[in-house]
Structures are given as C-alpha cells and as structure tokens.
Image: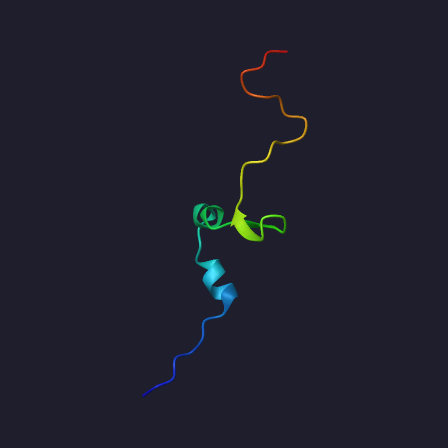
Length: 53
C-alpha cells in the first residue's frame, strides 16, 4: 500500500477561479461564534442605487 502525498494549500488555491474563491469566502464574526459567508459591503463614496442626487 502506498502512502498518499499531501497536497499543499497553495497548490489547491492556485487551481481556483476568482468565482470559486468568492463562493467560498468567509468572514469571522466573534459575536456570532465563527465563520460565516461574506455579505456585500457598501463602497465608501459610492451613490446608493435608486437614489437621485
């Protein structure tokens, strides 16, 4: 029986597309007790959708 070689995390990360990275991205929230999927955050200085100046 042969031993299986472990795959480095850098090698696995190099194979991911940007869409796959965004899909699996998480944020640590201590108040909620762990890692949760990220939510879209507003960009400072950007106008809100639907609002006219």
